[in-house]
Amino acid sequence: MGALAIIELIFWASAVAGGVVFILRTVMMLVGFGADHGGDLDVNPDGHTAGDTDISFKLLSIQGLTAFFMMFGLVGLTLLRSQSPTFLSVFGGVVAGLFTVWVLSIIFSKMKLLQSDGTVDIKNAIGVHGSVYLNIPVNGSGQVQVPVQGALKIFDAIAKDGQKIFTGEKIVVVDVADKSTLVVEKT
Image (tube, rainbow, N blue to C red; front, top):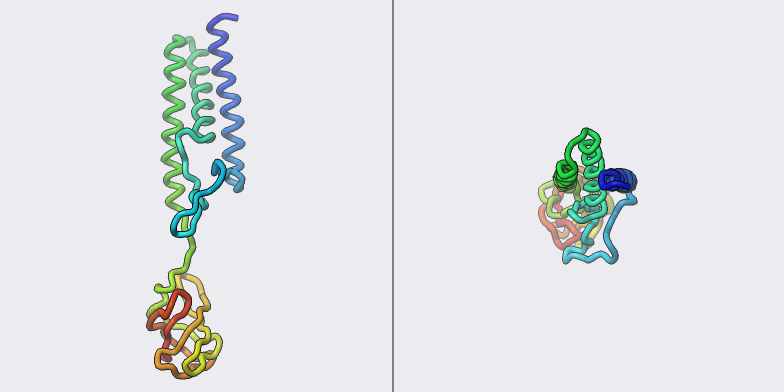
């Protein structure tokens, strides 16, 4: 087997192996099985795990390596078959592989910008009008319904003046008592 045949075999193996694994990993990632966390997850101070719904792309990830080898093999094989010198075929394959990894890193970093944690910030309820869901007794707490961040939410609530507010009465949120209780008054 000559040197040219060995290089062609390397290009074929890179293209087939890289392409098959790249396609499988991409499909798995799109259906939710592609989380490549590499073992235990680190928990950030905010309580989220590192990699939580994160499709971050790293240069030496399986996805990056398979994309590199897939394009290295395809472009290298194409150049070799078009009678280009062996050096140019290898160089073209490397450049195509690196370019593909760079493009994928940009795509995945832009996809990361689309994620949202969905956490409701109770402070966004201040100034919002709603209604009493469960009676607020004198100097006690009940529950109110208020639209916050595009969704109707139910929160514990106390009356600003300590008076009783009945179910169904209209209220406005004037303050936040703690991380789960609103301060309201009748409107």
